[in-house]
Amino acid sequence: MIVFDRVTKRYRHSEPALDDVSFHVPPGEFVVVTGPSGAGKTTLLQLPYREIAPTRGRVIVAGLDVGRLPFRQIPHLRRRIGIVFQDFRLLPRRTVAENVSFVLRALAWPADRRRERTRRVLEWVGLGHRAGAWPAELSGGEQQRVAIARALAAEPRLLLADEPTGNLDAERSLEILGLLHEIHARGTTVLLATHDRELIERSGARVLALRAGRLVGPGVAA
Ligand SMILES: Nc1ncnc2c1ncn2[C@@H]1O[C@H](COP(=O)(O)OP(=O)(O)OP(=O)(O)O)[C@@H](O)[C@H]1O
Ligand SMILES: [Mg+2]
Image (cartoon, rainbow, N blue to C red; front, top):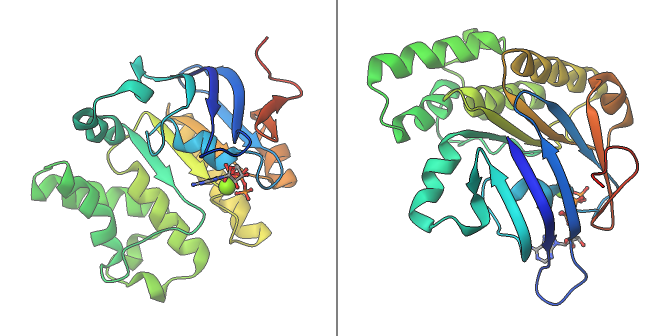
């Protein structure tokens, strides 16, 4: 599903944020990316959806060389990927349901299918009863569950989650981890960036550890 082949990412003239990083994630795997602040976790997660392009090396997602993808093909790539951010990024002037169905509208789903799918994913994250609420009326954990529902609405094969529990307490974090496990059990490949040790241990996932832009420890490709 994802191949990083000797990927280096350098922002301007600084030290590389990622330095010669290689790994594979087969379809259906759950992988955790960890490392201290500044180690390159966010940079790594931004490469598969072409938020940024590698300075050197190749990033392959579902067979596409995303670093060399023509701009007009980027929306097509992003349709297959669900993304969850630490700060939720819900649209404040849209209801919970609209935040989810908005994505499907962008994909030109017909109205009746949008409604049905939105209802299902919100029920799935336990927020069917809050469909008409505004994001500001929800707790942080609830907002993150909406963000997850939105990321899953279009049934992506790949879910990228960058510190999705960074703003949540331990109990809510485990709830989010439970959701990610369910998503994974349904066949979605999951890449989760976190520095929460308890979460990493409980995830049971393969761990890619970054330090100053380089992969260290177990799980490193030769
Ligand atoms: N847009 C940017 N421009 C310049 N430098 C950047 C940019 N984004 C990240 N960096 C630098 O790249 C390095 C890796 O940053 P990155 O955000 O990937 O780390 P991180 O592991 O996600 O950290 P955190 O745990 O704090 O989120 C850091 O030194 C950072 O300052
Ligand atoms: Mg980060």
